[in-house]
Amino acid sequence: MKLSNFSKTQVLIIGDVMIDSYLFGEINRISPEAPVPVVEIDSKEMRAGGAANVAINIKSLGGKPVLLSVTGNDLYSRELVRLLKEKGVKTNHLIQSSERTTTVKTRIFDEDKQVMRYDEEDAEDMGRELEEQLLGQLQDILKKEKISMIVLQDYNKGLLTKRIIKQVLLIATKNAIPVSVDPKEKNFFEYQNVVLFKPNLKELSAAIQQKINPKDINSLREAAEELKRKNRFRNLMLTLGPHGIFYYNEAGESDIVAAKPINAADVSGAGDTVISIAALTMAHQVPLASICRQANHLAGKVCRRVGVSPATKDDMKGYR
Image (cartoon, rainbow, N blue to C red):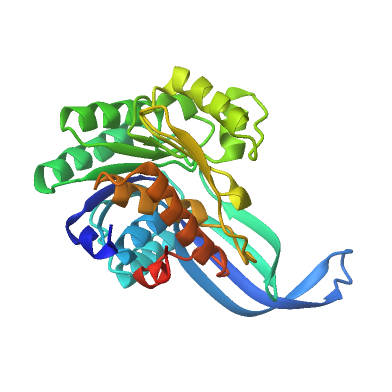
């Protein structure tokens, strides 16, 4: 499967968008006001994160993203729109609301080491009026666009409410559009009968209240079977951090696809890359084992870079 074949693959991403803000500096002294280090800031940077980063990944890998989300009506929302347009991602389906706050995650670095993070967000479920606006936008998109795959990108920031999840899945089924999910713990079991479910090890372990050994295929298979009884997913990709990805497909076949050891600079955004390449390739009926190998390769590439960073076509060079 060549990435160039994604040029006509249109992926609808629905989920929590945010800004990832970075302050880079150096620690040379302790504050005289309290026993804490003083970071002397040298530079600042903002990047599009969450579902917005998935959209950018889809775009940079050669696909056609359609992003549907809700932001605040604030300066950070306008900055997010600018960042997305800069990457060639359309923003006409971003709903701005004065009732919401645009999520911002700020990370402070001492040279290349993260020393602190602070978050500004409104993580409460959005209200009925915003739910109706979002569902209306969804119907408009499906009337105008030929969507190959829907990605539900959940960061527990209040956009993917139980009602939104249920309605999106019903609408997707009615329109015969497959759905891939990158879940979080809060609504973990609301995502029923999706074509691809992609939690990480920590999320799955917490959801089924079971300790999982990432090196033991039997432990992983037992966890997958327990989850399938509750979620009825068709395919599972379980990211295992440095251990790679475990998959369990609709035929009941499973395996661990090991990742190559790397010196990771920053793992933030790696999951966004994994769901992006998975959604694109699954839309083309690529076997799950092959999807996992490509996802491992690309995640390894983005983890070598500091800060949330999308995968690119160039990152696939050297892929075997």
